[in-house]
Structure formats: structure tokens, C-alpha cells
Amino acid sequence: MVAILAVTMSATACAAFKQPLDEPLRSQTRTLLLPPPELSAALEKSLNECARKEGWSKKIPFSGPVLGSIAGFSGILPEEKLAVRIGYPSTVREESSSTEGMTAEQRRRVIGPDDPAKKVSVRLERLEVSVDSEGCVAEARKAVYGDLVTSMRIENFFNEAPRTATDAMKRAEKSLKSAAYGYEKCMKAAGYPVKLGEAPKLAAEKWGQYRADGAPVHEEEKAMIRQDVACQKAENIREDVDNAVLDGLGSWARGNEEKIVELSTLTQESLERARKILSE
Image: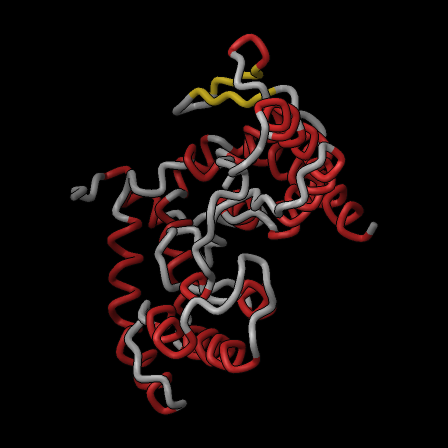
């Protein structure tokens, strides 16, 4: 897979929750923390089209697991259409590396030369990141984001935002605990005896690892996922958890509004390019 990729409540944290993060900054921050799935889909399509031109036919995934919440908690699903399309990760077969068997020249042309002299770097607020400037991965990034620096700024916003710097995560965890009973009752009534976060394990027990990465999800698993999403929605799990994190980021987001607005605009421009790539 190609890499992209106990706190005491302070007066600042209290102030953040007394001053909720308002729109449109709230939605802009959320979108940057949980980018539209079309971006990764377009990156993967561009990467693999380029790799085929270099004689590599095995599919190369571009990004990691799709998160359903900006808190990063496992078990919280994204919106139904996307959740049904990707399925539970537990039913995906573990296979050999998608780049195993590449020649050195293919790796250089597809993944990148991994040469310090041929990397592009950018210093962000909390870290410095760099990527190869050549190869199919670099070309895919440029096709979607326009340039490599923009790709790194958008892809690393999740790591830039201090999501755990306040008591936001504690509030999010409390929200999960309060919703757990209702979720469990909802799933049990539908024939799925699981607690919150256990659905992937049940799916693996029922159907095993029956599909390759990216392969279609069968109807029985889709039905379970739809029920999972419905039960989570009935308890407002994703909304409540995300709101806890966003409110905890209030002071930081307001202090970084100029950057967030700029990156939000760049993300929308990237989304337009991604949709064009996916439609071709």
C-alpha cells in the first residue's frame, strides 16, 4: 500500500466550548478533517492508469481505511452509500504487497525514485513532510490537487489539527458510551447481536475474507452495513462525536481561519478535478 499516507480541562478548552465553532468555518474544518472520498478514488484511478503504462497491471491502493468520523474512532461508519460500496475491512482478503514483484525501474517510475534530491518538502505547523516529485504517485497527486505542496497541505491537515489538545476526545468518548446501549439494542432487534465496534468481527465470522480489496460487497454484507448505519444514525453517533471534536477545536480553528478558508477553497478545486477524472 502506498503511504500517503489524560488531559485536564483548561480555561482555553472551556472557552472553546462556550464559543461554538460557527458556520461556514465549522463545515470547512470538518471537510478538511474528513475529505470527500472522491479525492482518494481519483488518486487511485490516476495512479493505476499510469502504472499500467509502465507495465504494472496489479491494482495499487492509494490510501488507507476510510474513516467515518473526524475523531478517528473505529467502528463509526461513513454515509450509507460509501459504507456499502467499501464494505467492512474484515471481509477483505489479506494479499501480498501490491508492489511485490516490481523491477527497480518500475518502482522508480511508479512509486518514485526515493531520492532526497528529487523530493518536494513543506513545513507545516506541527510537522515537516516530503514526497517524491517524480513517478506515477506524484503525477496522480498533481492531477488531483494541482501541485505537490497543495497535496501535502490537504492530506496532512488531519495531523495538523490538535484534535486531542482539549477535552474534546473525552467528550466524544462519553458520547459514544451513552449511545452504546441504544445501538446494541437496535442491532440485536435486526438480528445482529453486536456491541458498537463489533460489527466487522461478526461480518468476518459470518462470511470470512471472501473478497479482494476493491471487489464488490455481496448483498448479505450490504444489508448488515445498511442496518449498522441506520442504528448509528438513530443514536446520532457520528454527528455527536464530530460535534464534540469540532467544538473542542473552536479556538484553534478561529485562530487559523485564514489557512482553513484557503485550504477549503483548494479542496473544492481538487474535488472538481477529481470528479472530472472519475467521469472519464
